[in-house]
Image 1 (cartoon, rainbow, N blue to C red):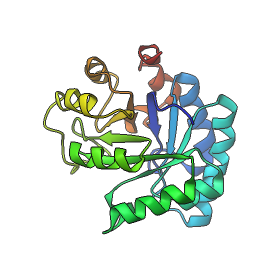
Image 2: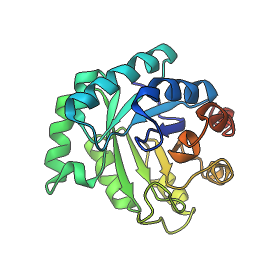
Image 3: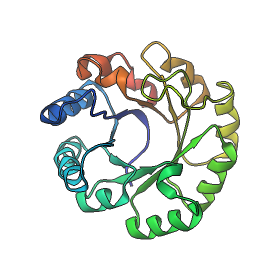
Length: 212
């Protein structure tokens, strides 16, 4: 299974025109990004599969994982490495839904959004999640209403309680990401600080050697 570690870049349709998807993602990878998540909120199911397959060719080339946001069926159809799921993706009966997705995707990556809840992370680790994501860490331009974690010390508690990789997300940029390194988070998830502008130059501002 692919490693969840380093700079975790998340695509955004508002920042990346469809025609530029492969170019911008490849630039981000060349700049030092270690993981790509395709987040498509507005395209049809068929278009999302097509876009995922396009990115799969690039991530295979560079031997890094491709994660699909929200939709395990797109992950399955595109042969992506896995899926990332939030509360809205799992519905009312989260545990039953998670187990069905785990059965569907077999040994693929399943990441879970845990917001500011360590208890939620512990639950899903026991169920077999591959990694968990916490945030927003800082004010996020992508999700301005997202609930913030209480403090960065939250990650100290999370590292003590969890064995699976921990991803920090929300408002992280090249000036603030180093604050998370002393808490030994496994990856930092970034949207606008990578894809708003030149992805190669933006990614170079994050020193990926910290995770090596």
